[in-house]
Image (tube, rainbow, N blue to C red; front, top):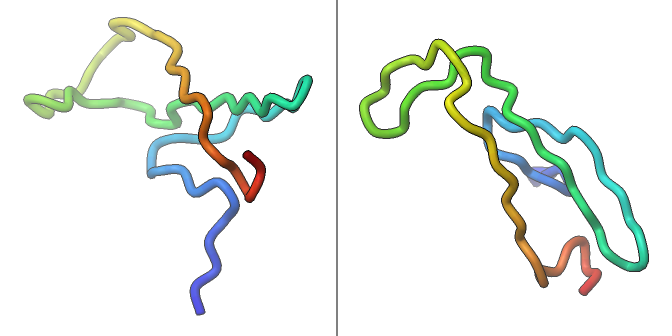
Length: 65
């Protein structure tokens, strides 16, 4: 039987933190790649082009709704 971690992140992402406040779970995830590449052409990036926040809401986590 395969045992999976509670938060199975894709390769290249790492857990930076998790906080529960007022019943809301906030998980901070960061890229762990040293030299990320363009998803379209595959060229390795030499600098950070942008950064942004993503918000996924109203999803159950570990049986908690």
